[in-house]
Amino acid sequence: MIGAEISELISLFSKIPGLGPRSAKRAVLWLIKKKDSQMLPLIRALQDVLTNVKTCKVCGNLDTAEICSVCTDTKRDTSVLCVVADISDLWVLERGGLFKGKYHILGGLLSALDGIGPEDLRIYSMLDRIKENNVREVILALPVTTEGQTTAFYIADAVKEACPDVKVFTLAQGVPVGGELDYLDDGTIETAFRNKSSL
Image 1: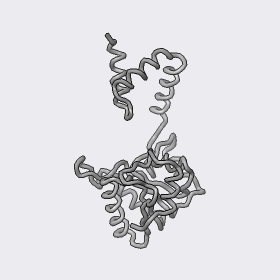
Image 2 (image 1 turned 180 degrees about the vertical axis):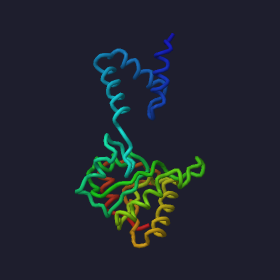
Image 3 (image 1 turned 60 degrees about the horizontal axis):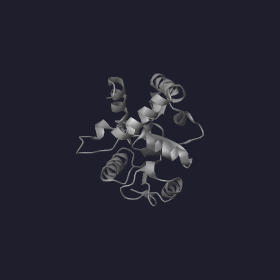
Image 4 (image 1 turned 180 degrees about the horizontal axis):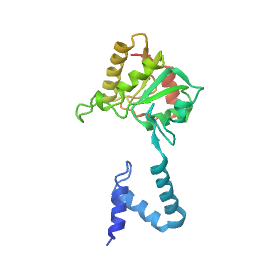
């Protein structure tokens, strides 16, 4: 009933987080009905992102430059480093405009079940940044999950061993157990930053 081209597009859309097969089918049908007003701009935007967006060499953020705008912002406090699991976490924290330091994106969390170890994440480059930039405070803004806690304790130990004078904090009040940063409101995140605790 459905042509091969449309089936392929539905299949690709269904792989997007938050979209299952039925939602993907609805989205594809909507795009087909709105070819000129929605599909063509979407194709152009996707091509633009594919061509121009790069991963920041310093923190791991996405930008059109080799070093992202957050890392090149001279108004930010280079002595404070906020460590997050993923790019979406950085975007959430930036949305509130509460944090004025620098970021480091790990690219995931430690997980024995998934075979993700320290060498699979950007932990060693984080330690290099701490040493090279005279960082005096590290804030671990990681999910309050088993993997998040495991990663936080591993990083805290690694930082204390490599840079004993650096203080390590984790977000406190406001972040529920099992909570993901992406689902928290700005007020909750602000409270968590204000009540960070030593690790």
